[in-house]
Length: 351
Ligand SMILES: [Zn+2]
Image (cartoon, rainbow, N blue to C red; front, top):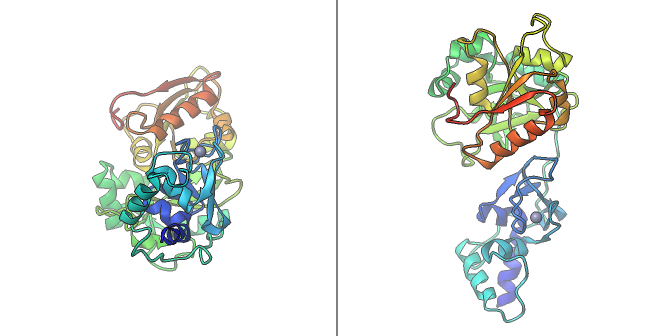
């Protein structure tokens, strides 16, 4: 019964099919990446957040913001598994191939969908007041006094005492955690215990990021950073910032202690460990402004806070992943006309 396997694939829903196809499922099932048709990974040329594919109709459909491709779970499976962007005609032998591949992935045949699409609802988008984020931060403990967090820092080649003294990272408290302190349904307490702060372009607390601290993989496979977004104007653009970085974001000008002809150096890193590495360095004569970017972090408003004629060193992982390359290009594009922008090459993490 050929209709039944097709119905089964459709009923499995877009999110479940995407998981089995090993697409990235983002924002609790609201977005997917990459698009199976145009293969883009970001929402638009300007919006570099991942997930150009929007999940629609409570998981029944999807549509790509980049190329306008759309369909149901069946088309998603078809475009990926047959590497085509068009539905095969009636009687085309590729239908048999698609069925075999869907069966192999457990999408039909003996597969019983865990959630039908009628039951599937995207979780409500949550925004957390800055005061609430700050309250949790205040209850966090010193990073060097928490075995898990200190152990994670040491494995990353970082000094827990310096990180704690500079208040770059703290340890999640073990009790009374707010409801939003979870990552895709898994509570931060399970292991996302290293907590860092991200700031918006006015130097206001915009989100807390919980970072997985154990040596073993997190339960959801490969996902390492949980983020709780909130605060004033935190619609995406927020960066990790050292104390000097927060001053620059807040005031949008050179620090007053810098002599008039002194050069302000800004180091932009990617991800929490590299940001910690640079923000905790003690061997530099004049400390740089150290900002850390992650997916969707950089925006024009943040770029505008970087003082004119700063020397900006972009240390994203462009040698290792495409995303790092995109961040680097986006950062350079927003600054090159008024700052000296250098993209560091060579092994990341090296001086
Ligand atoms: Zn597309």
